[in-house]
Amino acid sequence: KNIVILISGRGSNMEAIVRACASERWPARIAAVVSNRPDAPGLAFAAAHGIATAVVEHGGFADREAFDAALADVVDGFSPDLVVLAGFMRVLTLSFVGRYAGRMLNIHPSLLPSFPGLRTHERALQAGVTLHGATVHFVTPELDHGPIVVQGAIPVTAADDAGSLARRLLAVEHTIYPRAVRWFVEGRLTLAGLRVTVTPPEP
Ligand code: GRF
Image 1 (tube, rainbow, N blue to C red):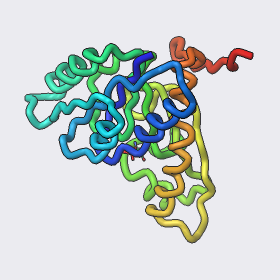
Image 2: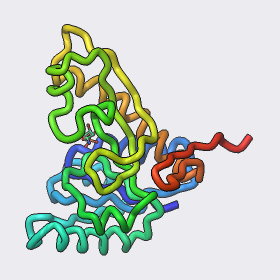
Image 3: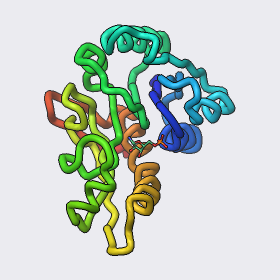
Image 4: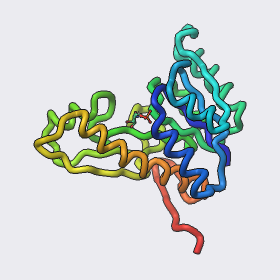
């Protein structure tokens, strides 16, 4: 299976997926890492690991539709079976989301459906939750609302601030995101309508 990973920055989730794909010998390859920012630090990691990289700068396009059309052209050039959003910080249009329906995943740093959107750690602290977490979900048109695949949670203590939550949660993200992607490339994770199914591995 061909995986195309979209990033905008650091790319630590992308890195976790690249490493797991190699070390666990997934039936898959990372066909490309694509960024909307030329200075995304994650691009260097991908290139150093022999992965094709591409940049589609959103600034150069008249509107979201034009950007997404160009992005889809580049992504499709790598024949993806799965598109993985890993810290990709652009809201995607209906046509882009529809094109990859059932084969595009995202990770969001909250226990959805709580706290869609930005500044999730701050908002979790403000709300006084005692559990925080991250969610891998299929991407659907409504931002951060797609069917949930897997979640990981951490306790919130009185000593926590947004930075400590982000740091502890990132380690959880690096566990659950590769797991979900692996399920998909093994053909064990499917979306039918809004229903997610994960089947057991072959014996
Ligand atoms: C992660 O916290 C992810 O949940 C969110 O953006 C951050 C990306 O981090 N969507 P990285 O680029 O994978 O290091």
